[in-house]
Amino acid sequence: MIIGIIPARYASTRLPGKPLVEIDGLPMVIRTYRSALTSKFLHRVIVATDDEKIYTVCKEYHVDVMMTGKEFKTGSDRIASAVQSIFNADIIVNIQGDEPFIPGKMIDQAIEPMLMDPDVMVSTLAKKIDDVRQLLSPAVVKVVFDMNNYALYFSRSVIPYAREYSDIAAAIKSISYYKHVGLYVYKREALTKFTSLPQSELERIECLEQLRMLEHGMKIKVVETEYESLSVDTPDDVIAANRYSAKLQNR
Image (cartoon, rainbow, N blue to C red):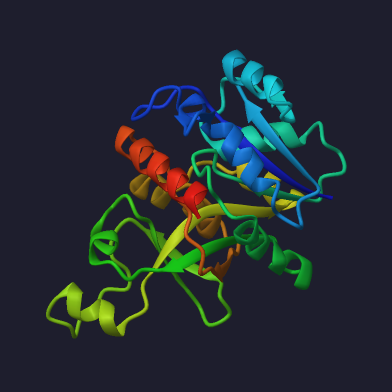
């Protein structure tokens, strides 16, 4: 069984109460849930939260929701806790709760390697970067991968470094740069292993938990996607999301 889980934590430094922030009149966590339901591979979608307010709102909208503890530092830890009570979950998809318009087809692209290759234990997505500002932004995580599409490294810095180019604007025209899309798919045993590992040095330095997997020898399959997903992290992002929603309605 393939389960999608949306970790929803009320506390957020840049946008307090983020899961309940309204996007065009609908709480963001509800929009994310409904978007995830458009996946053709997911058998069930669940919101995992530590907050009574989020739990209550989910119930009001007839969303499949469960309570988890408040002690978890990451969404992955919260998901691993939730999965303990779902015994038939073989493949688990970590769906970011701040991406209210995530296409179901995008989720399916990340799941597909699991269905095609039994050796794939973790998969994620990457999208080609065409904008220099995105490439230079530390908020946009970059990824490089090998010839078999397994991740080599993730960084907030520009990777690979274009030694032979005079500036980044010239390099981006000739070199393929990719941003990491933070959607993860795990085999159950891989999720259990990952969340039991201690924090690694590179993870601490870059503040990227996926580096813990690489440092401990876990392989991450990277799927290139053509889809874009709008992430909502700040009040300005909320404004942009409302504009995007209005455009969707006008189509």
